[in-house]
Image (cartoon, rainbow over all chains, first blue to last red):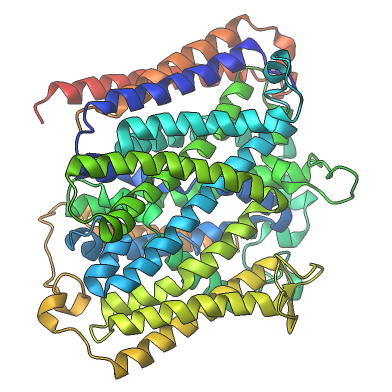
Length: 563
Length: 67
């Protein structure tokens, strides 16, 4: 594919603004609080959109459309039951403890609530996970740019071989993200996430419109696709009767509860966006504001997959009869967009990759600096020193992501891999947080033992089971296969359920035999010991609980419509 | 925060909208066969231009007010 001048021009405008925003924010980034917490000075709507966009990286746009083409509209479960309820819970119930405890990160909350070892465990596993995610983001982008031959012309013109196209793509995204995060820290990342949010809507809305018009609307999709692809709940009674190969219990407990709450309520990558808000009230509204667009995003990111499938647009993998679902979005862009819009669509895609990466990098540099460096390596340095460490950590984090990008090259469905990582790290963590925030008897030893055994349980479950048709190894079964799931997704859901349950039970048992901290030390950290706060918000539509109820009702309605 | 975010967003979409709709005006009609015969560059570019201008205006107004 050859891009025309107008496409390159639009892309350059975006790159120019991204770097310009970083540069403009440089003068406001003087202290470590400015760099890591955006000075806690960001209005709620900006945090809300950033909260949504930080998660809107490669795994969303490419992975969700791929899943849409692979599993149908049921993929919207990842949004409607797999995100929105958890976002509401975070805003209404959990945010007061994150924001109110004065912790600067999720691991730091764990230290305040429990102890040093629990924090260390979370800090290290989280740091690893962010680097892994951002590497996957980078890999996905480089691969996509390679398949679409976007950088072929410039790279070949420089006299370099075709293998340099991948290297050039990785390098380009790394350098741009590095530049704007170094300049403006979290503010810069948040501003660019919001920029990216609008770009994605601007690039994808016309795509969905044209695609739907072409296939004859929703009725047209229903006529051309199997019934299971246009229903979210029908056939969920048994793994044999739906394309996802999952059943209601795995879906309800695995996705809607453990994975969803585990990610949205405890993952510092998203929580950090809310913690940057300018007041408690704004912090609580952040995930709720994000939930509104989240609810309708399936129409923007999953529908293109269904349209591509209906139109028979998805190409086969080279030399196989297996369709390459990850190409659903790119082939849609190429099929429907003329020069001009094509440039805008590709820019939106690039923007999502980069901000997904930046989200991980800003979370990584904060956890590295506050929870690893300041906690264990150098406790008493000046603020200026920590700011410098944060900037170094940014460089290091991006370098490590580049490395991961090359490792990630062997996985085929990005979403499944990420789900697996979340199952290992976030699933047990959810049990720790729920017990820590809502049961004052929970002890540090209990939390730590729970996290260890929960993560081990995830690994064990993954090692003993295998999705149908897969070969033992990275997909599971490396300890021997005791159970075969209908799909990789079902396996992931149950890995998460397993990890959560083990962590929950072990934390409770160990807490009972160890000594709890006195109540006085837990004020502001535990629900029952914290006085109800009035955020001074009198306008009803600004109240978290009211917003939460509205969002949940709307989501319930969507589920009924697309039953 | 010192910089109202609506300013850079608005400016970016003003530039993008101008380029896109301008291109849609002069481009050969044949390229719009892909987009079902709709001049999506002109229509959507025009919309993005208006959106961009609205954000610039909103951002400037807010910036004028004391914080």
